[in-house]
Each structure stands twice: as C-alpha cells, then as structure tokens.
Length: 192
Length: 160
Image (cartoon, rainbow over all chains, first blue to last red; front, side, top):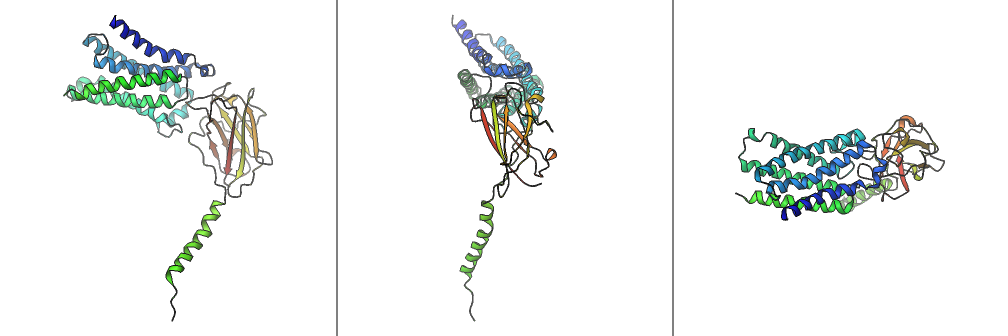
C-alpha cells in the first residue's frame, strides 16, 4: 500500500507538469521540432526529481535495482538535455549560440547552460567511475555537488522562462526538485 | 606684488569646465545602442510591405537623430518576430517600412507570441539598405505582457 502511494505520488509529480504543458496555447504556433525541444526540457526537469530519490534510497526498490535505475535515468536525462539544445538550435541557431557563449539577452539562458555543463560533467563522472582516481565517498560528494548545480540552474532557468510550462505545476516541480536534491545532499555530505 | 587667490581660481576653472561640457551633452538626445541578440534571424533587405501577413498587432516607433532629436524621414526599418503566423527565421515573418516626415513608422503584423522564453520583437535600421547615412542599429524590445497588441520603440541614430 505504502509502495503504491509512493509510486503514484512520483508518477503524478512527473506527469502533472508534462500534461499541463501539453495544454499550452503557445504550442499551436510552434513547429514539431520546437515543441519537441520544449518537452525534452520539461521531461529532463521531471527526471531531475527521480535522481536524488533513487540515490537516497527513498523509492521502494532494492539498493542494486535503485542504482541501475539511477544510471538509466541519468542517461535519459542527459539525452533529454541533448534533444532540448539541439531542437532549440534548429529552431533558432543564433539564439542558441548567444546562450552557449554567455551573451544571450535573456537572463535565464545562462542558468540553463550552466546546468547543461554540470550535467555533462556528472554524466562523464558516471561513465568513467571505475577509472577516476577518487575514493567512493569523494566521488559521491563531487557527483552530488554537480547535482546541486544542475538542480539550481534548471530551476532558475525554468522559473524565469515564459514558455509552455504552466506556472503552478512548474513551481510545484521546482519545489519538489529542490527539496529532493537538498535532502539527498544532506545525507551525502553528513555521512563521514 | 599681488598674488592671485588660488582656491577661488581653481573653483572658477572647475565650474567653467563643468558648464562647458556636461550640460552640452545632457541636452543632447543619446543614441540607441544595438541590443544583445537584436540581429538574430535578421533577413538583410526584406521587402517593404504594407502589412506582414494578416496583421492585428501594431509595431510602431520613432526614428530620431542623436543630439538634436530631429526626426529622420524615409528611414527604412525592418521588423520581425515569432508570431501566430510563423517562426522568426521564416521569410513571411519579416517586412520593412519607411518612416514618414515626422520620423514615425507603423507596421501591421501578426500577433507576437512568446518564443525563446520572452514575448519580444526585433527591429533593424540597416545602413546597407538605407541612404540616410546613419549607423546600423538592431533592437530586441520585450513586451510588458504577452497579451499586448502594440509595441512602440525608438531609434536614436548616429551619422555614419
């Protein structure tokens, strides 16, 4: 019963912002690539909620299962970032070049780009885990620090944007991501 | 032999400097700088049109000369945006018009909708497509609300 409630809660937290965005009036004036890019961003942000929960063992999964799911979710999250940036690039190359070179006129682009680089670093850390000369605890703390940067950057990026995300579900997801990341960070940085 | 009082002399000199330079600048109209991202998706030489697409949104503005603020007639201004009828990069989203004797321009264009996170328009004064001899300026004004149906901008240009 408890497990079912946890899964239901998580599914709702992920689905609500995606479904709400699907009703955005802005979609009718965007082509398929731009819409895909936007939704990749929303899916990526929603997956950001799952990662710290898996890392902390908050979901009803065995430890080894949680680890495997954490890896798969991480790969999906990074794929979402790639689809997001590529789709925006196809839609308006100069705007994405401005963002990547930190010369964008919009105040939110810089946060998205910071989160993107942190996500790349976190993904590389995961891929090279065995080859990095780091003790497991140090590895975890660095990976978690990158997670904090990804979460903070993504939340600032999303909240400042006037886009397809609906405001209430966007704010709720931002809050949940912040809480989950901070809670897991506390666990990881306290464990000595 | 009398010596000149130094302090009042310095003060007078400083006052003369201030009155001779600062007010002369303050009374002049400052030029409009090109905005970040203003030239994004610009289409050099977009044709002069009566209206962009079906219209419904009013892009208006004034083009003035820096310093004395004199209106600049026949200045060619191009405007484009992500609208209900197309993306910024689409040719149909672009059009140009000329200012009247008062330096005013008006373009009826489709409703601007938020894109790349902000409801915004783009405008260009491009020296390469205008014979008035002013320096190129690109603007990227942001609408106060996405529901706005007008946007008014000002170009203050500097002779090239």
